[in-house]
Amino acid sequence: MSQETVTFTLDGVKVKATKGQTIMEAADAAGIYIPRLCWHKDLPSGGNCRICTVMVNGRPAGSCLFPVEDGIVVENNTKQLKDHRCQVVEMHFIEGNHYCPSCEASGECELQALGYYTQMLTPTSPYLRPKYEVDASHPDVYIDRDRCILCGRCIRASEFLDGKCVFSFEGRGIHKRISVNAEHNLGETNMEASDRAATICPTGALMIKRTGYRIPVGKRRFDIHPIGWDIEKKKKSG
Amino acid sequence: MAKPLIATQHLTSCFGCHMSILDIDDRILKLAKMVDFDRSPINDIKEFTWPVDIGIIEGGVSNDEHVEILKDFRKNCKVLIGIGSCAVANSVPSMRNTVPLKECLEEAYLNGPTIVDGGIIPNDEDIPILLDKVYPLHEVVKIDYFLPGCPPSADTIWNALVALLTGKELEFPYELIKYD
Ligand code: SF4
Ligand code: FES
Image (cartoon, rainbow over all chains, first blue to last red; front, side, top):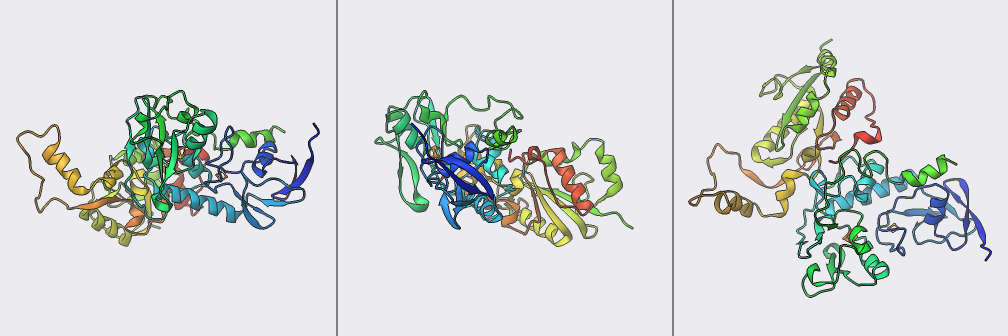
């Protein structure tokens, strides 16, 4: 099957891509990292977080969904977009309750890593300090909604990778929560620790019990290398 | 020319950030040549002798006394730096923020597992009054620079101080800015 090649411009550089790819997929292949949170390589794009927003011909578009087209002009690494991303990261930090120093996901958390990536020293807006419920009813997996950024990865993973339908959203706007498809709690669902959904959360909101703090500080995923380093490495090594 | 003056203070914290300041090891000798310390727990000076150039605060704001101290620092420091996650972000002290203060006090002093024969919630006029929440510094006064970390490493603190004292931009390599 022959694949149609298209060429587009990404931050002033000509990039070749295959028709049907999203801008993010094409950028990844070219070794250019576009920040993302709700996207996961094994899942269909959700388009929930908008961190991956780029400018396409001068208009904002989610790069994890927008397909490449011949001749489009895409901006990614601009001051405006960097500020936008830092703002989105800040909003996640103030809308949840993220206690990084004591969190099991610290060092492995993609939200925290994006804080480092966007050079956020601290969120500058006041914290909202909302009240969220912890669901520890399941013997092996727990939900700490303080840390949930509503990316929907667990929902998609449960549906598309596990063939279950354990998670869903409830509520709207600031009242939106991750919830489970059961009368009361996670313990009543057919969730198992071996489900892909159990390890797909970008933060520490959905965690397998008794596995925290195993990796020493200094050796965790984002201790040494920034998020996106693996993608950018491709470009550097040619 | 007189050396620049530094003042430091801890609020609700574990003193770990001050330990991290001391952790600059022998660079402390260089620091002593570059600056003088005014009000600080390191020399036990409890009031400002004069206004200072750099104020460094560790810890979150959790009672009325902290608010006064912090305002005093803002008034007396040309540049005010928050160091450590408790001072600049959500951290261990702020974990009480999603529980009403009354419930926290009742759990600690009336219903906790180590309470024998009832108990009382301390209410002496000399004890600072707890705020409804624990706040990061910048929700109370303007803060000029933030150094996150639990604690920020000695290298992070050293880099920041040297940059400020030599009039350079604060820039950090990736490994030096961490929230934990
Ligand atoms: S629990 Fe985790 S994976 Fe699920 S929506 Fe929240 S942040 Fe995303
Ligand atoms: S990664 Fe594209 S919207 Fe979240």
